[in-house]
Length: 167
Length: 203
Image (cartoon, rainbow over all chains, first blue to last red; front, side, top):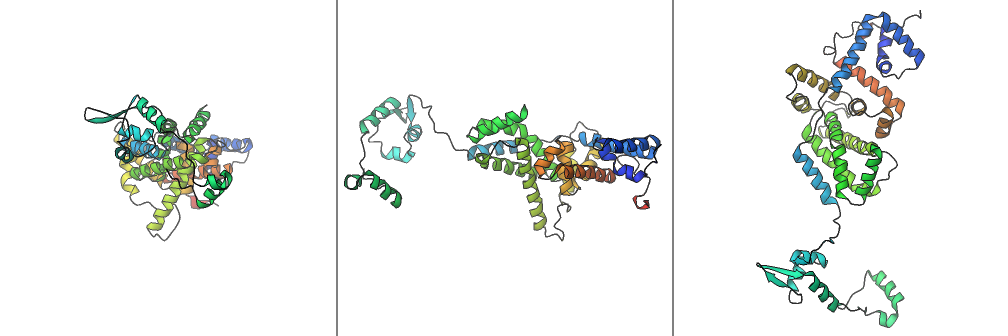
């Protein structure tokens, strides 16, 4: 029989031994020792019972409030996809979104827009709004290109940080 | 394969799909929360705050996500870094003499027994033992605690833990076994009669 190693060195290696992390020769030496040493077998049992206790610890869950808070925080941080699902009738908020302006602009420009009132609410037929857009459509000539040509106008605009439109 | 699904979800989230985030959160909420709670010694309120910060960080970093490493490694690496930074800053705030991460965590003791090991289905004795084990884990130095929790409680292989903690697998393995020995020593009475040979008596 191999000379059996001292108990302490066996105990130092018990954890890797149990996990199968020791190379086979070394593992055999430990196994031999364990076969003959009740005290070290007790240590082995203690480590195994530690694993059992750790595995038996309860799984935890965050509170429902925290769950909601996290989902909302993340959703709020996402860029909102532009809406495309407008129905045939829009309210003022829908119309603002549809036209990429704020609600105040809609309210100020009500005299231009085709609207109808129902149930105390101002509503807009999407088809009428589209027709209104069609009537408004025209080209916009920047005041620069007539004189200096488009390429130069683009470069000028770039250096000045944008074109000033005269609408 | 779970890892592939994670990757698909993360790529979809990267494109701004909020449902993909919800699916990822469903998968990783509890594992990450368990990790954070145990790292913080049972301060569940603080763990919830950190959980929020980890997932907000994930959302902010989604544009930079590259599906080279498994998603689990990524999210746990973020959680661990975040947690270690928090523990470090708390140590600094408390103006302790030592800057080591294994400094005692005041407040943890009070909540450990009740919050971590107290589902009503358990007997008082089981709960008491559970609380002792939780306390022993909380008392491990942070650089052993993270590895122990990730491997023994969250079930990640040493190689995965090595990626998460940016250490080599041999170090992770050694630290895991050392953590187990420390726990065994700390839980002497609970696990049966402590070592009959006094350690100092070694030749």
